[in-house]
Length: 440
Image (cartoon, rainbow, N blue to C red):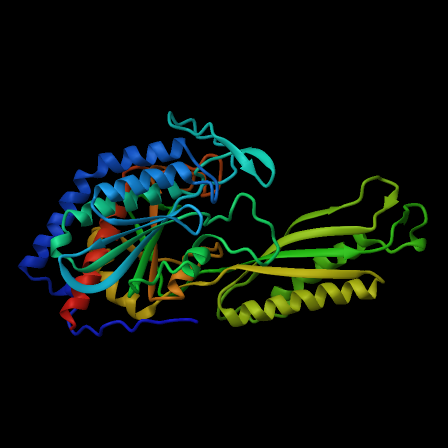
């Protein structure tokens, strides 16, 4: 059941009317974040050099758990699979705010040339593959570990508690089977009760991006990242000799017609004025020999939308189009769409409330982000409590436009960005708790 926690209505936001004591807290947070920067960089380099795929993050989880225990937190390990959750109880009563980082890497061969580049190989869907932190989750973990230390040092002043969520398998588990049954990552942690006991009033997260300059924070109210569905189409024909196609039913030609038909779903059948949508076929496999028309063809792809209603409409039209074209050719099409990620939506009231905090944390270097057709399972946390998910730029200005994007073999993070990340998460948690206390 979807649960929404109502936010306190604030007449005077803390960030705009800070008194001397609150300014002092800001200064202490800033000094602590700067002091821990060398440790955060060392953590990131270590985690980057030892990446782990989804649900295999044993080393990373052990590093995190040891750190949180050292800080005196209540720590739960093995959440979902390899998840780690720490609870920092403040010195005064108040609500619970959650901060989240994802820990998993990708099956990518690193090509950065960094001295701490990955040489790791792991099993991915039954095959040994090179592994790299090509999406920046190493930075997310290091930032949240540093944030935990900063806030633990000031816990006596916190009116409430902070739940630190270190999540596995945001990119999906390494042995994932697309059966529509297995849940992973954030969804698995939510089902395990991570947003409860104690209940979370608000949740914050960030993601590094190569598309923004180092230290710049991007945010957006409302839908910010797309939902994601995995598309699987099996076209069943009738095998025959390639010289006598009339004796069979050609699933290759039928599949080509289906692919063309799918392009009309966004271009002709979906109202994209409110928000964009994407339907992409990424693989197509069929046949074993040049002169044999095969029995079947299997295609896979991805579906991206913003909003549950559009997602349902697009899914229905994919099924109708694929099955109708197959039937007209005398073939059949089995269509499955596994909805893995919800639309990541920033709660409008929470976003407005925390923008002044973002501005202070990033020294006014804050911009409104465009919608992103990439997907994030932070959406499952934000479906349980008001959430705010922001982007952190990690590319030096001199390399803008030339830097490799996230998920690329040459993706590189500017370590200077970690300080802004620690300031951002620390201040979001502190400010939210202070504001909630003031509103009582």
